[in-house]
Image 1 (tube, helix red, strand yellow):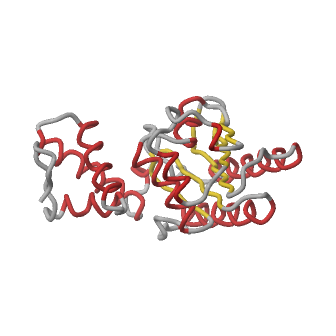
Image 2 (cartoon, helix red, strand yellow):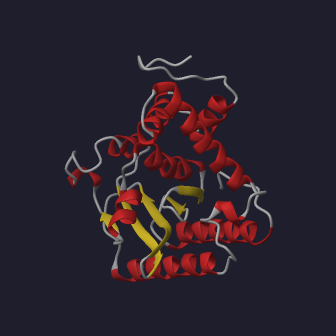
Length: 231
């Protein structure tokens, strides 16, 4: 499924194709779930799509927590392979690893979507059973990664630049998120990064979508204050 489900024109087509690619990956690889996170031109996550609700939530949790295989693959530009989550040091993803375990995930493989130095996003493959991908499975995963890159490169202006599509839902959601970030910064007298950390923390603690928290802030239904309470 796609968290942002209404995109006009070529962006809508690209998201539909990425969703189909996630479905194909689940059927042709030993995968429980597959998700794709896309990056905006400034490096912020703007859209995500997945084969199922659980995969979608696992993708969003990485953004909420600021850690995980997706963020690691993005920052390093290299694939991240974890064949057995129980073998990883707790310090690698101290907040995100428990989230994966709670959903039964025991292995994850993250493939960066990029062309040269241009980062487009990450394809994540989740598994319930531990175990590495075989050579043929790994080759197929890289093939799907290449297909995802081609899908993104086919989109004029590319969906990772929401400012070029001011009328679509992706741009609206991105605008609301960063408007909320600015409002919380003022409320707290803090930096933008601290404001986003507070928004993420609340969304995580209350198991709410990040955009829903942002919209509550923008609508003045939710306010943050310095003593770590909200009202």
